[in-house]
Image 1 (cartoon, helix red, strand yellow):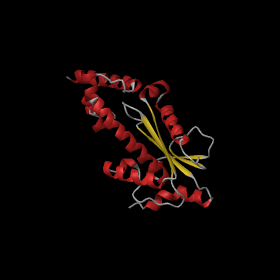
Image 2: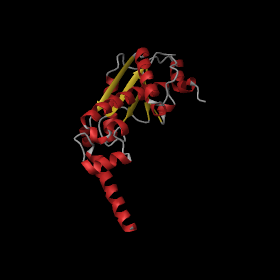
Image 3: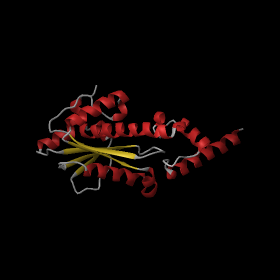
Image 4: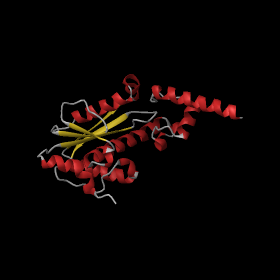
Length: 215
Protein backbone atom coordinates (compact mmCIF):
# COMPACT_ATOMS: atom_id res chain seq x y z
CA UNK A 1 0.00 0.00 0.00
CA UNK A 2 1.33 3.42 -0.94
CA UNK A 3 2.36 5.57 2.01
CA UNK A 4 1.79 9.31 2.09
CA UNK A 5 5.55 9.83 2.31
CA UNK A 6 5.83 8.24 -1.15
CA UNK A 7 4.17 11.37 -2.52
CA UNK A 8 6.82 13.63 -1.02
CA UNK A 9 9.88 12.44 -2.94
CA UNK A 10 10.10 15.51 -5.17
CA UNK A 11 9.11 17.93 -2.42
CA UNK A 12 11.65 16.46 0.02
CA UNK A 13 14.44 16.89 -2.52
CA UNK A 14 13.54 20.55 -2.98
CA UNK A 15 13.02 21.23 0.73
CA UNK A 16 16.48 19.74 1.36
CA UNK A 17 17.84 22.44 -0.98
CA UNK A 18 16.01 25.10 1.08
CA UNK A 19 13.33 25.62 -1.57
CA UNK A 20 10.40 26.62 0.62
CA UNK A 21 7.50 27.61 -1.61
CA UNK A 22 6.75 24.74 -3.97
CA UNK A 23 3.62 25.00 -6.08
CA UNK A 24 1.84 21.93 -7.38
CA UNK A 25 -0.16 22.55 -10.58
CA UNK A 26 -2.72 20.38 -12.35
CA UNK A 27 -5.79 20.65 -14.57
CA UNK A 28 -9.02 18.74 -15.16
CA UNK A 29 -11.46 18.60 -18.05
CA UNK A 30 -8.92 18.28 -20.85
CA UNK A 31 -10.75 15.37 -22.45
CA UNK A 32 -14.30 16.65 -22.03
CA UNK A 33 -16.68 17.51 -24.85
CA UNK A 34 -18.34 20.19 -22.77
CA UNK A 35 -17.45 23.13 -20.56
CA UNK A 36 -14.39 24.78 -19.13
CA UNK A 37 -10.97 23.32 -18.52
CA UNK A 38 -10.03 24.07 -14.90
CA UNK A 39 -6.59 24.32 -13.32
CA UNK A 40 -5.36 24.78 -9.79
CA UNK A 41 -2.06 25.77 -8.22
CA UNK A 42 -1.33 25.32 -4.54
CA UNK A 43 1.59 25.92 -2.18
CA UNK A 44 1.59 23.72 0.92
CA UNK A 45 3.79 24.46 3.95
CA UNK A 46 7.28 22.99 3.84
CA UNK A 47 7.39 19.66 5.64
CA UNK A 48 3.62 19.21 5.76
CA UNK A 49 2.14 15.75 5.19
CA UNK A 50 -1.56 15.74 4.33
CA UNK A 51 -2.89 12.23 4.92
CA UNK A 52 -5.27 11.00 2.26
CA UNK A 53 -4.23 13.39 -0.48
CA UNK A 54 -3.83 11.47 -3.74
CA UNK A 55 -4.67 11.59 -7.42
CA UNK A 56 -8.21 13.00 -7.48
CA UNK A 57 -9.33 10.27 -9.91
CA UNK A 58 -8.66 7.65 -7.23
CA UNK A 59 -10.85 9.33 -4.62
CA UNK A 60 -14.60 9.31 -4.10
CA UNK A 61 -16.49 12.57 -4.55
CA UNK A 62 -17.15 12.75 -0.81
CA UNK A 63 -13.48 12.19 0.00
CA UNK A 64 -12.42 14.86 -2.50
CA UNK A 65 -14.79 17.38 -0.91
CA UNK A 66 -13.35 16.62 2.52
CA UNK A 67 -9.76 16.94 1.33
CA UNK A 68 -10.60 20.11 -0.61
CA UNK A 69 -11.45 21.84 2.66
CA UNK A 70 -8.35 20.47 4.42
CA UNK A 71 -6.10 21.64 1.60
CA UNK A 72 -7.54 25.16 1.71
CA UNK A 73 -7.18 25.19 5.50
CA UNK A 74 -3.46 24.35 5.34
CA UNK A 75 -2.40 26.01 2.08
CA UNK A 76 0.08 28.86 2.14
CA UNK A 77 -1.63 30.04 -1.05
CA UNK A 78 -3.79 28.64 -3.82
CA UNK A 79 -5.26 29.71 -7.15
CA UNK A 80 -7.99 28.22 -9.32
CA UNK A 81 -8.71 29.28 -12.92
CA UNK A 82 -11.16 28.19 -15.61
CA UNK A 83 -10.87 28.68 -19.36
CA UNK A 84 -14.20 28.41 -21.24
CA UNK A 85 -15.08 26.12 -24.12
CA UNK A 86 -15.09 28.97 -26.66
CA UNK A 87 -11.43 29.63 -25.86
CA UNK A 88 -10.68 25.91 -26.09
CA UNK A 89 -12.09 26.02 -29.63
CA UNK A 90 -10.04 29.10 -30.52
CA UNK A 91 -6.61 28.08 -29.22
CA UNK A 92 -6.95 24.25 -28.83
CA UNK A 93 -7.20 22.27 -25.62
CA UNK A 94 -3.48 22.00 -24.92
CA UNK A 95 -3.00 25.76 -25.01
CA UNK A 96 -6.23 26.31 -23.07
CA UNK A 97 -5.02 23.96 -20.31
CA UNK A 98 -1.69 25.79 -20.20
CA UNK A 99 -3.51 29.12 -20.02
CA UNK A 100 -5.63 27.92 -17.09
CA UNK A 101 -2.48 26.75 -15.31
CA UNK A 102 -0.79 30.10 -15.89
CA UNK A 103 -3.81 32.00 -14.59
CA UNK A 104 -3.98 29.79 -11.48
CA UNK A 105 -0.27 30.33 -10.89
CA UNK A 106 -0.63 34.10 -11.18
CA UNK A 107 -3.06 34.10 -8.25
CA UNK A 108 -0.48 32.75 -5.80
CA UNK A 109 0.83 35.11 -3.15
CA UNK A 110 3.62 34.72 -2.33
CA UNK A 111 4.85 33.53 -5.70
CA UNK A 112 6.44 30.09 -5.52
CA UNK A 113 10.14 29.34 -5.82
CA UNK A 114 9.58 26.17 -7.84
CA UNK A 115 6.77 24.48 -9.80
CA UNK A 116 5.84 20.82 -9.90
CA UNK A 117 3.48 20.32 -12.85
CA UNK A 118 1.49 17.32 -13.97
CA UNK A 119 3.00 16.36 -17.34
CA UNK A 120 2.94 19.89 -18.71
CA UNK A 121 4.98 23.09 -19.01
CA UNK A 122 3.61 26.33 -17.62
CA UNK A 123 4.34 29.65 -19.30
CA UNK A 124 6.49 31.06 -16.50
CA UNK A 125 10.16 31.93 -15.96
CA UNK A 126 10.06 30.08 -12.64
CA UNK A 127 12.03 26.81 -12.45
CA UNK A 128 9.70 23.86 -12.96
CA UNK A 129 9.54 20.12 -13.37
CA UNK A 130 6.96 18.29 -15.47
CA UNK A 131 6.17 14.94 -13.84
CA UNK A 132 4.40 12.20 -15.78
CA UNK A 133 1.47 10.98 -13.67
CA UNK A 134 2.43 13.72 -11.26
CA UNK A 135 -0.95 13.66 -9.52
CA UNK A 136 -0.10 10.16 -8.30
CA UNK A 137 3.54 10.94 -7.46
CA UNK A 138 3.56 14.37 -5.82
CA UNK A 139 1.50 15.56 -2.87
CA UNK A 140 1.55 19.13 -4.18
CA UNK A 141 0.26 18.13 -7.62
CA UNK A 142 -2.29 15.75 -6.09
CA UNK A 143 -3.58 18.59 -3.91
CA UNK A 144 -3.92 20.79 -6.99
CA UNK A 145 -5.76 18.01 -8.81
CA UNK A 146 -8.28 17.80 -5.95
CA UNK A 147 -8.88 21.56 -5.96
CA UNK A 148 -9.38 21.57 -9.73
CA UNK A 149 -11.58 18.46 -9.76
CA UNK A 150 -13.89 19.61 -6.97
CA UNK A 151 -14.21 23.04 -8.58
CA UNK A 152 -15.11 21.62 -11.98
CA UNK A 153 -17.52 19.07 -10.51
CA UNK A 154 -19.34 21.91 -8.76
CA UNK A 155 -19.46 23.77 -12.07
CA UNK A 156 -20.97 20.64 -13.65
CA UNK A 157 -23.83 20.77 -11.13
CA UNK A 158 -24.53 24.35 -12.20
CA UNK A 159 -24.35 23.40 -15.87
CA UNK A 160 -26.68 20.47 -15.21
CA UNK A 161 -29.30 22.83 -13.83
CA UNK A 162 -28.94 24.94 -16.95
CA UNK A 163 -29.05 21.98 -19.39
CA UNK A 164 -30.81 19.21 -17.41
CA UNK A 165 -31.56 17.03 -20.44
CA UNK A 166 -27.84 16.33 -21.09
CA UNK A 167 -26.96 14.53 -17.84
CA UNK A 168 -23.88 16.65 -17.19
CA UNK A 169 -23.97 16.03 -13.44
CA UNK A 170 -23.45 12.33 -14.18
CA UNK A 171 -20.89 12.22 -17.00
CA UNK A 172 -19.21 15.59 -16.25
CA UNK A 173 -18.98 16.39 -19.95
CA UNK A 174 -16.94 13.34 -20.96
CA UNK A 175 -17.79 11.35 -24.09
CA UNK A 176 -19.78 8.58 -22.41
CA UNK A 177 -22.34 6.60 -24.41
CA UNK A 178 -25.15 8.46 -22.64
CA UNK A 179 -23.62 11.83 -23.50
CA UNK A 180 -23.08 10.86 -27.13
CA UNK A 181 -26.66 9.63 -27.45
CA UNK A 182 -28.08 12.84 -26.00
CA UNK A 183 -25.89 14.90 -28.29
CA UNK A 184 -27.12 12.94 -31.27
CA UNK A 185 -30.74 13.45 -30.24
CA UNK A 186 -30.57 17.04 -29.02
CA UNK A 187 -27.57 18.61 -30.72
CA UNK A 188 -24.90 20.61 -28.89
CA UNK A 189 -25.36 23.37 -26.34
CA UNK A 190 -23.47 26.69 -26.52
CA UNK A 191 -21.01 25.25 -23.98
CA UNK A 192 -20.00 22.21 -26.01
CA UNK A 193 -16.55 22.29 -27.60
CA UNK A 194 -17.28 22.41 -31.32
CA UNK A 195 -13.78 21.32 -32.31
CA UNK A 196 -14.22 18.16 -30.22
CA UNK A 197 -17.69 17.48 -31.62
CA UNK A 198 -16.55 17.52 -35.25
CA UNK A 199 -14.33 14.53 -34.59
CA UNK A 200 -16.96 12.83 -32.42
CA UNK A 201 -19.73 13.17 -35.00
CA UNK A 202 -17.41 11.92 -37.73
CA UNK A 203 -16.64 8.85 -35.61
CA UNK A 204 -20.34 8.31 -34.88
CA UNK A 205 -21.18 8.52 -38.58
CA UNK A 206 -18.43 6.03 -39.42
CA UNK A 207 -19.74 3.64 -36.76
CA UNK A 208 -23.27 3.93 -38.18
CA UNK A 209 -22.04 3.20 -41.71
CA UNK A 210 -20.08 0.19 -40.46
CA UNK A 211 -23.20 -1.07 -38.65
CA UNK A 212 -25.27 -0.77 -41.83
CA UNK A 213 -22.63 -2.68 -43.81
CA UNK A 214 -22.68 -5.46 -41.22
CA UNK A 215 -26.44 -5.75 -41.69
